[in-house]
Length: 422
Image (cartoon, rainbow, N blue to C red; front, top):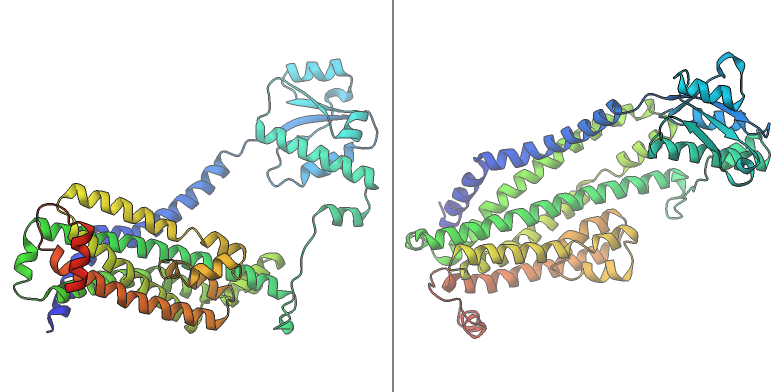
């Protein structure tokens, strides 16, 4: 077997058959799902019982609108009840609150109709969320009443507007285009997150592996059997294969589940069905998977060779920790322009930075899914490939000498001599 493949197999086995890999690969998604379900369960369990309140309307116009607005709230924070014994005088209602027969009562006056202000009399403040619900309810009730009351057209207007997007390139999709665009955005965000996690995590592991082998003298034994470039290439291939396996484990099951859900989209409510169909229509095809794989492959090689070269320059664990922190922070900064991509994938910032190789692996997949021109994707990939080979050449020359160097850190002049004579 070729020495490169021997080293790659060793690195792959060392990473995959570890509890850390299994915990990260399977435990992280399980933890994320568990936290999501736990948050929902806690929210449902912590949902307070509705407060029984009496509404006294001095205007004779707002009570029905306020009651309807409160009933439209999904959490139903208040339950409007009749006054005990039918007595709506302030004294009787205050006494009913003190006797715990009701939780409070609300007074609507001319100020409520004019400015959306009301008075809630209770034994205790209902809490920020409930107070906000009541404020929201009287606000919209007063607006609805001042616009004309129970007119269905007013209700439709106050329920909120909508935007129907029609893509002139594909007008046959009609208003489904907006749902498809939402699906594209979700796929782009998910792919960007996966690329960020994998590209950031595995080069760090490679850096620490290089430093560990250098400090314990194992690299000297390995170089008795393989050449430096074979050792570096084998380590990159092995670690990259582990990352590619993890990427497949994270993405393929999600794709399979979403494909299986395609037949059940018709059973969802109309609004949810439109979004679900948009997500399903935006599922990555072979071309998108190719772009995703290329971004990971060449992005990983670009950063892995850089991290390996830096690891070869470290002479102590302290140096390794400082280098890891600096490189990780720098790599994280490269993903920040994703905000510009999600806002406008064709903006000058998003387009220009996607051609800069350090940014390309994080930005290109999202821009492709969101409809960037194919020629831009191809050009950016070509630049990334060329830069990856250039980085591998420079890193290999630094690694060849640096991994055996001991003592003080090399100066910039010495690094340049290593690169020039390597």
